[in-house]
Image 1 (cartoon, rainbow, N blue to C red):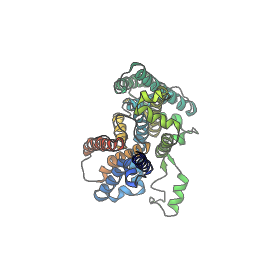
Image 2 (cartoon, rainbow, N blue to C red; image 1 turned 45 degrees about the horizontal axis):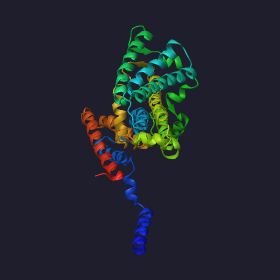
Image 3 (cartoon, rainbow, N blue to C red; image 1 turned 120 degrees about the horizontal axis):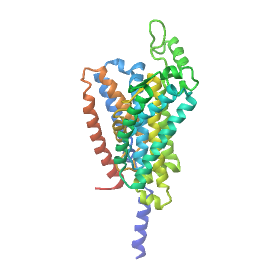
Image 4 (cartoon, rainbow, N blue to C red; image 1 turned 45 degrees about the vertical axis):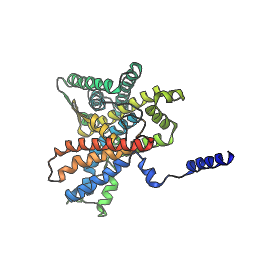
Length: 372
């Protein structure tokens, strides 16, 4: 009997110690599909688009909308990994834009007060969303769908009050001009460096010698910064383990000591604050805010997160995947203008990419979990 048991134990040990191949490890990475999508889309536009698309100015052109969407997508991805949705994030962009615009134009507050005020209001609404979901047991899809309409309507009503009857509030740029915090949320960064590069002949210039690209739009820097921080939190901190656990099996996670309620409410607050950040950046860039700001962005953010590897069932996903998913959006949105294709193909692309991403992610989930 001992002779039979010993080989079985040895085989079990060998199975546990066996190392996975590189291909198997890559297949389990949630961002794999998004990276492959970036490569495919880039190849497509290299073949079909004008070469100007991949000049420095062309890259900045498609990275700017990608960054704005990507900030929302990273927040949406974190929440989806935690097992919840927020369909109100697009309306939050409009509502936070109202709060920020009213604070700077109507109340005349400096940015050091207007920005925290906007973030606090957004975080409070996110906390309300999360609390309702957790206390009532209603699906977050339903609760945040309700807030989608509530916040959009509140934006319309609030803008009419703040502007005296209009659904647009102007004068933000004049109100924040000269504020020491403005360069962190508006305009281009590293301007002197780009001037030096232009003088050195490294980058393209206009006839007067000025660089065609004056700097890196600040939203791109915020986008990259948030992607790195979110990835670090997910992969290197206990909070990241809590997020995955809360989204994978909230009951088991709670029984194991994970503060599931706090984790999920915090993720709702984070998502809302991502919407507020996009509102502040876009309102300062345009100098005004309106009730349609962020329209339909909630769906695009969720699609970008799904393309980035997030499962609709929670417990699996990647912030870096959402980063690449948003870049795909930006490339296609702007890239079509460099081709002879009708730009309405973008809508078909959205639906197709969502379906492909869901099928691919479902296949990966089955490979990871061993389901059939």
